Image 1: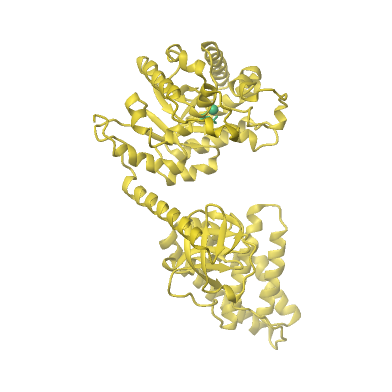
Image 2: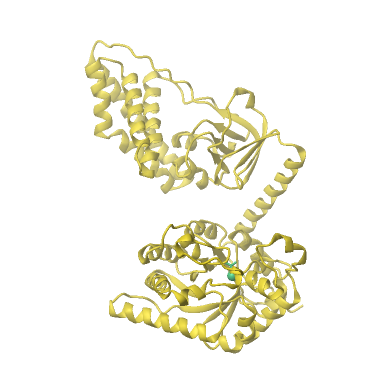
Length: 542
Ligand code: PEP
Ligand code: MG
């Protein structure tokens, strides 16, 4: 068994034989021509033919993978009409008195080099496109076909690179996966692979040789690995993973759009946790009812300096808009402890998990906090946002937060900036917050229980320390009783309760949580469907 790593552009497991897609070598011979005008009109005719091929490809792609993905062929049509491109080809024919194939080839090289050297990622991608359209014209001019024929059993396609037009022309039913040596994450081929739900890897450092043709392989699109001639153990493991995936897809078909109600009628909200707007795709893919925890600190961690109000506003707005009226709970900055950003210049601490972190930083450095709140409130106009505050230990903290939030709203009013009065909640993730949850419930709209930190602080087990795994009982009765206590205290004040820590996804505890009265469970996107399935099969009256 040999394995090669690459970059995954779409997850999933594919198991099957390799088919190498080698481009038919387009050897372009340069030769002198007698009549430049004749040669230019030969080129013009080929260009017209290319345009009609692209129009047909556009229609095919639109039907199979949707309008957005098909748009690449409109772009190709436009590129074929670009004056700079056309003038370059005609000039080479006229000035050098050479054949059209050669003029197209040289122009393709020059333009793609120029695009590749640009800083703009979008323009860089155009390098592949200009090669693609040029190869099409050359094929027409030389009467050659598009490459090796596909086999008639489903295969893993291995190629040096795949142009978007090659990708879309493949028979979807015969492609298990794409694996390429080159290519980029945002190339249209990668986008098409995602749209077609096909596991795909790019940038795989593998030498393509005919010997690989027909060999058995496994593509692990989750981890970006291709295994060639896998051993039995790996094959069995991957087959299990694949059937889990299929089960998930089956669940999705079955559950899409359905409510999460137990057999005896208790409705539960099942939301997803995200750390980034890129995760929104997984939220939608898994049909979550909302976002129960947007870990906003990742915006800070991915930045080399404090993200501005506007940068944050754009991100929260995008989340609100994408979720289209479904609840999106943004947790304010939970930096500190294991999540450090240098530019915060936080002192080294003896006990960072119990140190200056999360809301404690926000209440110490209110300028940072106010910037974030302004961005959240401004974005609230674009969907159903809610805000929640981490690491609460006292009523005083909540009162201070409310005073700051009132200040922010007053400033927005003064500046005539619109916002909605959104729900405000807190995380219950310290034993202190649990014990005074009756008092805290009078101050907020909802609670979200952070079982990761709550377990850490309750059992005195550092969640970062793997040596303590043997001592960690994730089902510790102390934590479960705390959750029950929080539910009771919350409901007395008509405050709803969610769980957004990892325990929320533990299917062994779902029944107990629902019996305690938990109203919402927010879990990683991939756990949403199994959890919804579990809820729908529970009967709490039994
Ligand atoms: C938690 O503590 O359970 C939680 C959800 O927050 P985080 O894991 O980000 O600390
Ligand atoms: Mg936490």
